[in-house]
Length: 187
Picture 1 (tube, one colour):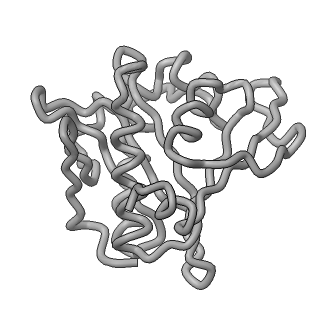
Picture 2 (cartoon, one colour):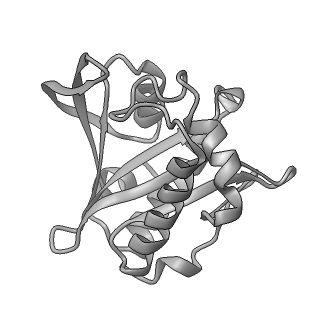
């Protein structure tokens, strides 16, 4: 992967760039919300330390080109509204996993698809990925719809994969190949 610390992606409405320590409060406000975290494989954050630790770890893994974690900012505000990631990067296999989360006040406005498409474009065009994967709770219909609109195909189901706070859930595995993405005129 290339040097992640200098990345800055602009879309029509968004700027997508590395998180900074100044984002800790806004990031905590998003990921401490039980509605936002309902389908995640971790519980909602409980302290600002969760946020600062996440940002610190994200900055470290970006410096070593292990994963790419970016904040999603609305240009007109400017305000952090969520994050998107390429992680579990397998350099020799040219694949990574995509993840994203956005504050509930911004749900249904197309921001996640806009940010996701930009991140996918970066992954395929700039990083040379061949495959991007997603793992979601099958009950998370909103994320499933966003991923499907971005071209992902459901490839399988891992039964009873996670247990968070006593709740057991499955994982749907989705994939997007560079060839399918290019054929869909996303390139």
